Length: 203
Ligand code: GAR
Image 1 (cartoon, rainbow, N blue to C red):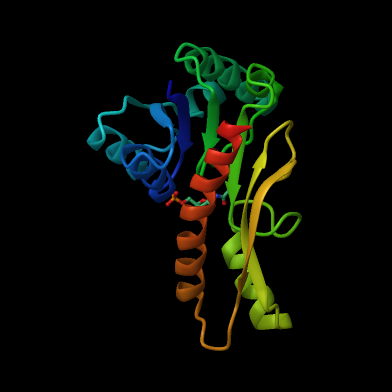
Image 2: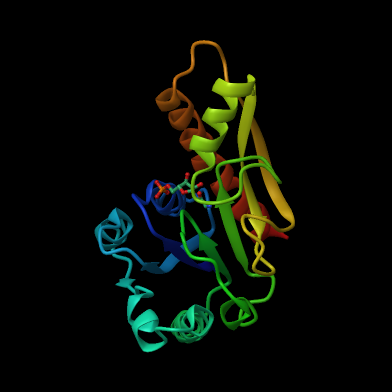
């Protein structure tokens, strides 16, 4: 029986597309059963709909409005509500594929060992939302000659941190530009993410 994947995305969804393609082509014994985006402009929702996968837009904003003086409570309330919605589709794995929101235990404790995250840097390097820019600045200023991509489990609120499932080093060469580096990283993460999901599901 195919595994049930939930994908969470905030951006263009190229990694969601890589997962959808791998499922459609039988490279993953899995189906994406539900997609959540937290930005209205996220192209990931359009990609999900094109593949016939239910996609919903769930922003944090209304929870911030409900808890104007308490950002922590807003996050926890949002996470609890989203966890309930995600649990309804009975996922085997929840994939953060460009998901720009840091979950609290209110979400993570509902899916222990079942949430993974993709990040465009090597383990321990450049956590956060601007890893590619950060690596490029380190290259220009200090001659950094590599960065990478990784997939890790998300056990807690550590930022882009947790037990590593897969990682790949990417060289930054003299002919690279910021754009060519980003293109190399995206190409690598599309492959790495599908491979990491496959290995996770076979465990
Ligand atoms: C990817 O590069 C992913 O690694 C990164 O967001 C991008 C989403 O691209 N995630 C992070 O930076 C997490 N901290 P996509 O929307 O085209 O899949």
